[in-house]
Amino acid sequence: MKILLALMIFSLIIVIHELGHFLLAKRGGIRVNEFSLGMGPRVLSRQFGETRYSLKLLPFGGSCMMEGEDGTEYTHVPEDSFGAKSVWTRISVVAAGPVFNFILAFLLSLIVIGSIGYDAPVVVALTEGYPAEEAGMEPGDRIVRMNDTRIHVYREVNMYVQMNQGKTVALTYERDGERHTVTLTPKQSENGMYYLGLRGSGVRMKGNVLETIGYSAYEVKYWISTTIKSLGMLFGGRVGADDISGPVGIVNAIGDTYESSRADGAFYVWLNMLYISILLTANLGVMNLLPLPALDGGRLVFLIVEAVRGKGIDPEKEGMVHFVGLMVLMALMVFVMFNDFRNILM
Image 1 (cartoon, rainbow, N blue to C red):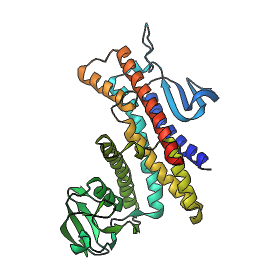
Image 2 (image 1 turned 90 degrees about the horizontal axis):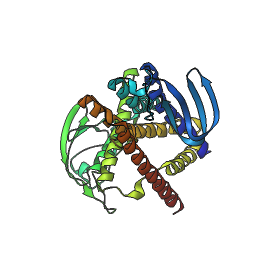
Image 3 (image 1 turned 90 degrees about the vertical axis):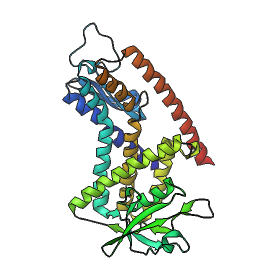
Image 4 (image 1 turned 180 degrees about the horizontal axis):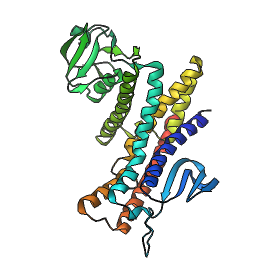
């Protein structure tokens, strides 16, 4: 069951990503030769107009193959090819994939938050002997700011403390309509981590339509921000290779979430799968925007350079850079999958 659920989630996210490229390509007058889900040989395929729609054997990945996108050399460049269009049209087509991932995250957030509300940044309890209690905070206080960071959901409190271990924070909270600011220095616990002594996330609030829309946007912002900060921790050496999860680890996490939520009924299974989808599609959007060869972000770098210079990079050289980047990404994928299996079996 967990494999089926994972395939459904991955397929949704990939289709929406490629749909972004597809729709903006069509809008820009670019011929799309094939729109596919999966990789490898075709299992099902049908031609509609100029585009072939395919389902391929390997159930991961997907593609939107545009005319001339693969660096094909022409004696006369077709007007409907990718390279024949303006640099700004090409930028919009490449950026559309990640943008559609963020749009999907927002739409799914509307369903989740519209159903069960958002995790309000309200203090539920305080840990005795820790800074928050000593500063006079009480259950029911609503946290609104930590240093220069505005707080909208309680998970942002946990994330801030985790990302700023041991650092003093000026925390602003609201009580009975009045705002108070206290300076808290995290206290180290027996496990070596630093905490403020706040316990929350037990309060979920549902608002009107506008509030639901607003908090859905905050939900997407939270996951984008978390992904970026996590990457910063990875490159900064604060997160090890063992903490990285790939497709196998994600499938296992989906299975664990499914099993733990079955007892609560189909509705909560559905909501948890949507929640995982929000996390994954926001994560994919950020990852694809990284300025690395073979990713959308790497292609955008070349297009932005072209927009600034007024002329493009030699297609052969650009193709070589993307090929090398693809090989590195494939090697990284193998490493991550090996790491996933090792973590599951240990």
